Image (cartoon, rainbow, N blue to C red; front, side, top):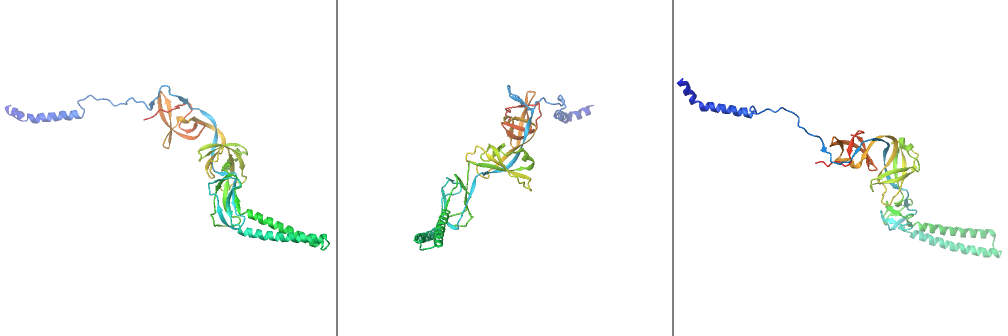
Amino acid sequence: MSKIANILKKNTKLVAGIVGLAVVIAWSGGFLTQKIRPGKLDSQPGLALPAGAETVEVKTETAPVRVEVVGTTASEEKINLSARIPAYVGEIFASAGDRVKKGQKLITLDDRDIRQQLAAAEAQLNQAKTEYERAKQLFEKEATTQQALTAAESMYASARAQVEQVKVMLTYAQVESPIDGIVTERRVEAGDLANPGMLLLAVYDPLRMRLEAPVPVRLIDRLALGQAVEVSLERPARVFKGAVAEIVSEVDSSSRTQLVKVHLEGIEGNVLPGTFGRLWVEAESREAIFVPAAAVVQIGQLSFVQVARDGRALRRLVKTGPARDGRIEILSGLRAGESILVNPVREG
């Protein structure tokens, strides 16, 4: 017995170390603490609904289908000013973008050759007049024949017509604005040779504008001459009232469209030709959902609304359509009967 006691006495520290190590392992593994069964923590989705928050019930309603047709603007009165005589360009008094008045001088052409022709024609006129008066006096004295008088009178009339013709040609050397408008498409500079038919510049009326849009043939029956329509322009970014002024009868075989020209109302001279625009054509009615524009939150390319349910405001991703009269069409993401916040709760 004494031998065993001696052995145990010598190894007391070793035994105590082993026991202590076992206790540490048991504590680290959680064997000495009370177990808690796994479960779900109570949490609520969304945000708390503020007291007195304004909501609106989602309803379906009958709405017309509005088809977007892309077009461009043009002036209803655009006049191309071309040369009518072969001559060098003298002076230019207007540039593209300048506002001009009717009758204002825009370009002068070199008229020296025409003035020489006028001087020669006037000299022939004076000679023909003298011959006619002499023949008339001789005829009164019965010193010449009726045939000679008629020939002199004819020469006089011809010379007079020649002078008038050259005077008209002389006016072609002065290019004037035919309307009050804005100069565009200036094609010449001083010193250029202008040939008959050559475009010099153009003037358009900025107060008479229209939208020209190729409308699909399937929608042409939805439009009629004089019909009131809406047009939205890119610049200025606003919606204009308009009326269908012309429907071209020819069908474009490649696009299956007909060109429709819409007169724009309320133009103040700030719409440029070639501006991008959209013509809205009313098609057949359908069931749709509209919500106040303020209820839709735009985050990047995504649109959201907040659905009110059980005192909470839940974010809902929606797909939107065009806005109209302060409302936005919801194409998907909402159902009739649901309630949404008119003024969404600010998140974050």
